[in-house]
Length: 95
Image (cartoon, rainbow, N blue to C red; front, side, top):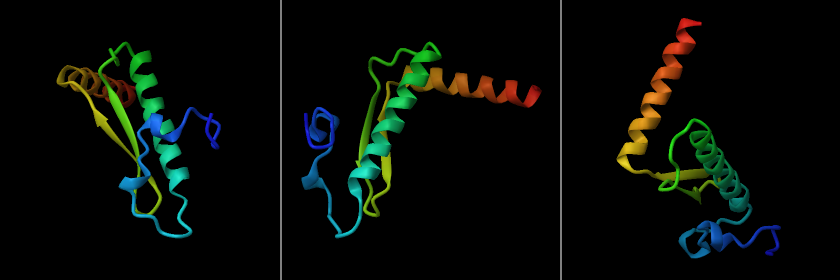
């Protein structure tokens, strides 16, 4: 267990050598937020019936400390998610 209560930041793709550090900027908070958002997206896609075994949601901290998620998805997964979002959008407008 690391100092943040997890398995270790490196286990989640955090590489401190990739980051330009500015004193006073909370990069870890942004990275954690991105990690959690990426995990939530993958969970939501799985709950919607999309195969998530090949999805990779990589968390990063931006230079200002905010988080960002880089997604790597197979084309078929993107197509399925697109269909799902379009259907939800049509359903929402019809309600």
